[in-house]
Every structure is written in structure tokens, then in C-alpha cells.
Length: 254
Image (tube, rainbow, N blue to C red; front, top):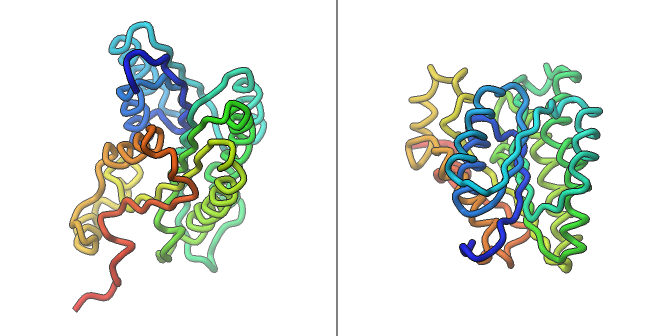
């Protein structure tokens, strides 16, 4: 964004830590004002907010604590955001749930669906309409390659991310003539706290990725930055795997 342009505001869900924090920092550096949500990372969110205000004086940043698993809280947030016109919306917040398909607990699966899918549909209905009226806007969803390729134990999580993909593609078609782009970023394994539970399997997992490593959060954030940029104005309805070649590879090795 040119220095002479007025900063435009982007909403980022799940921006308190990990990939979300990297997205917030990257977009701030690119010239955007950012409002981000967080659930439990209050200390991290407050520290990041202070850092952003110090690094970019005169700019506007805000953090909102909200549990996206709580439908009433999501509704309240959507109503709070109604008076604000956003240029961009990045749905990064996610809820993991691992279980074999035939052992899936419905309540836990529904929580994952609420956070990953339903919270997005509620919030995007609020922010997309002003974008369409102004004929300018960018929406990017952080999905998962599990929506594209099956992975044992990921039935509920993959289903929520696949539902998100179907919604995103439809929304992209419906908003394209209004100058709004909607895209789906599909990361593979990212080096964040979410994967800490799999630390003992890390070497084995990395050996199955053609790039032989996990992604850095900043690498995913850079793709989001591109989707918010002027050169991405004709990119909509796209699925962008950012997985080190994992989804391109046959899983059986000679």
C-alpha cells in the first residue's frame, strides 16, 4: 500500500498467537489497520497490540476477546462490527478435533464446525455487504489441505474445512461482479503451538513432506498479504495449497 493512501482496515479472527499473530503483523507492516480477535491468548494479544501501536504511531489497531464456539458471542461481535467498513477479512481461527471417523463425538465435532465454519458464515455476512456496496473487498480463509486429501483421524476437522471450502467458492461466485475477492488458503503442517502435541512424530512427519519441513507462519501470512494486495484483484474462488508439496505427492514411497 502506498504511503499516501489512507490505511484500510482488515479483520482477522484468531489473531492472538501463532499463524494469526503472523498474519496480523504482516498486514500491519503492509500498511493495513487491523482488528483481530482472540479467545484465550489475552497476554499475547495485549503485548502485540502495544507493539503495533508503538511501531505504527497514528494508525488504528484493536483486539476483541471472543469465543467463536459461543454462537451468542459471535452474534454480539457481528453486531459490534456492523458500523465498521472493512476492506479485508481473514478467517484464521480454527478448532482442531482428532478422532477416527466411526469414533467421532458429535458434540466435539459440532464445536469444531461452529468455530471453523459457522462463525465465519455469520461474520462474513456482516462484513461482505459493505464491501459489495463499495465494490471493493478481500476475503481470505485459512482452510487446510485436509479438505483436499484425507488424513486418518481428521474426519471432523476435515469436514469443517471442506464445508468452508464449498461456502468460499460459492461466495466468490456471488460477489465477483461487486469487486470482492474470496479465496481459500490450504496450508499443510505449520510450525506453531497447535502441532506441539505431535512433537514426537515431527521427524517422521517431515520426512513425508517433499520440502522436508513444516511451514513457517510467516510463509502462510505472506500468501494472505498477496491476496489483500492490488495484484490479486483478479484472483477469486481459488484454492491455494501452501504445504511444501504434500498434497501434490503420492503418499507411497519406493
